[in-house]
Amino acid sequence: MTWLRGFRMPGGTFGVEGTASGRRRRAIVVGAGIGGLAATLSLRRAGRDVVLVEQAARFTEVGAGIQLAPNATRVLRRLDVLDTVAAPASRPSHLSFRSWSDGSEICRYATGRETEEEFGAPYLLLHRADLHDALVAAVPPGSVRLNTAVVDITQDDDSACITTATGERLHADLVVAADGIRSAARQWLFGKDEAVFSGTAAYRALLPSAEVANLGLPHSPSGSARTATSSTTGCAAVNSSTSWPSSAPRSRHRSHGPLRQNPASNYASSRAGTPGS
Image (cartoon, rainbow, N blue to C red):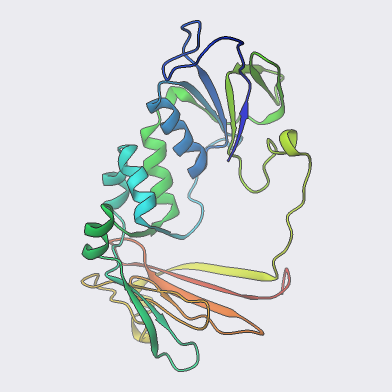
């Protein structure tokens, strides 16, 4: 996310609740993804009036599996959404890294109760949509403006201003650019840039656990014990997610594991290649 600051008052100081003149600070967040929603909730908790604008006409289920380490779930607890996020999530007992060539375990990291006791927050595997839904539900509907595309951002010494596709101008003390990798807002701060292809393409899918139960994958579809697998030199993780990376020169990585308490499994694969290959 990029913060565009549009307030400066000589001789004045800004408090959490408002400006030097006593007015509550107003913020506009551009983009209602996970980052934009989390920024909105954080700013509201800091006493700001926040408007969240999103160009999509409605929220839909996007993405697949994501991992939330304790440093992320601690933030969700502060935003009062952790219980909602954790309810459908899978809690792996450990991460297991396995060799691509023979499946032997290289190393293992605890991510269950021991991790939560040490770091004060859980390690979760879940569907991105479950996290997004929990954040959406925590933001008051009146603070969200869907179907609102931003076409310009300007600022002066007193405020920042966004212009929407309909010509409407919205002013605030702060504009947060959280509209993703193809951010339109970022170009007004740093100019146009182009994404650089890394040489790696990712293929992702969601499958019912029952459909992969006979493949001998190192996780428990029943959910009694879950493992996550991942690695960078040819490895995998057990109990909730498993990764099988290979070594150079043609590095490949496979990972899988259950995402939800119900019988759903996520299988992700990435490999070196070119677009469309």
